Length: 163
Length: 172
Image 1 (tube, each protein chain N blue to C red):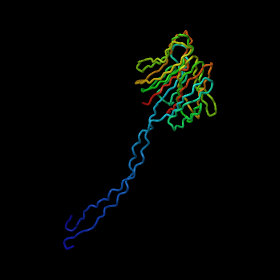
Image 2: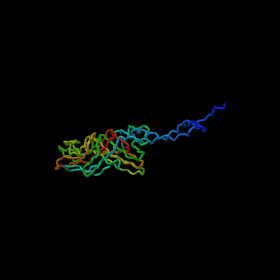
Image 3: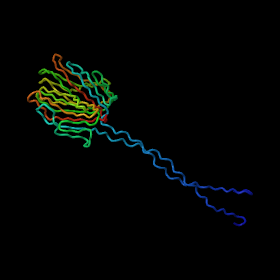
Image 4: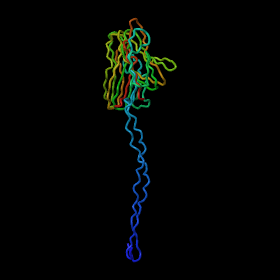
């Protein structure tokens, strides 16, 4: 300093750092999920000339790890409640009847569909809807009403519906 | 600034730096459920029909139960939405007489009055009983009415039996 000039020399610190900002906006909605799968079971049955349960000789369950269905020699078990669509098709020769039987957890048996043949060769296809409220077994029962009556290998597909 | 006796000190104090970015926002809401390949279906059981005419419905199952797509009445099913539909029909014609001529067809009528028939089975009987089954895919651009018609000579004792119709509205 001299007598006519003054120097002001100081440091003005910057203000303190601001507080953390508010949370950002929520993210965008996720993408649409994949198409729903409908578990299914496809069985081929052995032919038969005798009255009784038809035996399964080939089974395909999709997807591979589906818990909806299990199968043994002559019965399909539907393990999950829900609505199911079925189609049974094949050929019956001679006088005979074929029943689609359902057995519930209390061993109550119900014939949900029946196909009858009165002639040499009956080609048929039968579809329907099953409402399953508890574990159920499904099987095919063949009644041969005449000596040479028989059923050729049948195909039976059951699909779990998405509603 | 200066006047004769007072001095004003005028300066700017800079503000502090911007604070750190806030934390990430919360996760977005879950996306919608993926589509199913089916939107709705109706499964109808028809009464036995021993005479020429329209088959009447004995029982319907509609899924989902509150679906507005299908409105059945005594002898027809109304389809209320345009779309692609899979039809699966099966049944038996029993009590046939030798050489009897009989047929069963599906009549499709649009809300604008256009109508056509789809032949399901046309039989010249050589046995007491015949089974039939058909699967088809139909595309509708308008509302439709579906009926099943049995054509026969009523002097014969044949009848359409255990006729089922499954109609599925596809999701594509």
